[in-house]
Length: 464
Image (cartoon, rainbow, N blue to C red):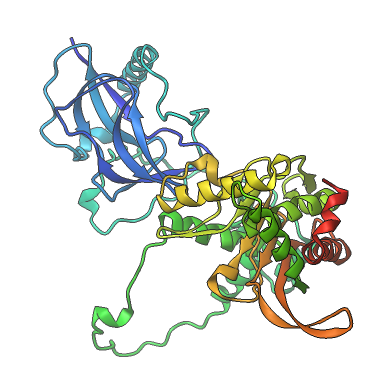
């Protein structure tokens, strides 16, 4: 006799908590084998195909294409061990009746036993719910995105809980606030911090949370007026959902600016000798060396002299964590938006190896095939915005890193060289750094060393 097993959206790794269904690869009634891809989903990191750990007949699918599901939500059900008839409806949530509101203790125990039985059967099948990534544990869920069409929701709604009398109010616990400045701001303005919802890690209340609460509290009540005439919906402008890659970038940038007290310093450098050295390297044959690879090599050596910038801040423990290896991220613009692939162990790579890895990751990014592992784990980011034809910028740190080096375009400019005015290849370098990990002297020293290596590549010979 066939047994119907439920396959849920697995933990995709790297802290991902939801995915959007892009394309179903199977229909209800199809026969699938173990580890066969059944659905293509898009996460905030990449587009991936999800394989099913069971073999059998697909009896139901949950979620239409374009639906966003959290980790742990049902994807489909499979009948294993025998023939089974597919369910008549692919993705319809069963109606909630009044009977479901009074589930007995005996029924709950039966449900738990059934779940244990399914778990036991599942253990006989493949555990490779996502080939190449782990399933070490469920990730924390974020708030679901509201859909305009409620009928499209396909996850079974839980039975409503029975109404119970309100319990006495318990004493309020400690308020999650670290900064004494935030506490003082709330105290001076007469704001009860217990009424503020923190947006920081573990619900930490940030200064921005207190300021937002004060704005809401002090906002004047709207005056009672006659209803305004209806405004055409087009006047409201186009609304674009912040989800997928764009949403992930928005969340990370907002978190960076909220949590990190960043500062930026910059310097102009004469890159003529660096460009000449690159031309000579490429003239001898073999794989071509990119400018980005030479800048990456300079960054790695500069970080070995200033390890304070290859770090992260553990806010919960109030500790600076200096990292032993340099995993170098670099900004790449694609059709899906801005992504930051990471070159692992950049410190152990040659200029040729760095050039090849930059080229490979850039091509994979343009194809939309980067894996979560390709996009995470960076310790320092190199941002070459000169490819957009601009000279300078103030980069936003790629949270949770501590610094980012920005590189503008390299163009001919008037420059005093050896006491004479000359036309040289000049580039502007900018460093944005987390002021918690170091002071301006360290940041300035790092940037000055990078500029010295750009102006005189022979400086690198001392460390090669």
